[in-house]
Image (cartoon, rainbow, N blue to C red):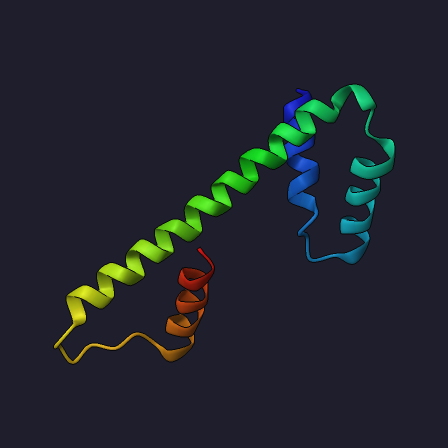
Length: 91
């Protein structure tokens, strides 16, 4: 139940409404019991791992696409290619 609460609040941190984001931020930053910090930080760690895996998947897709399209007449959209180049360079 606590995990669902923390998941829901972290999901609300990216809500469209600025007021909703602010309330979620305050709830996690000021109102969260110190006893729940461990669960909250584990959840943030899981999110960070998921994001890292997403970026690694993008890098893999990009490199495979580059390899497959070598010599072919297929091109990635320029903005996607630039984005993936930046991700690959920082990894």
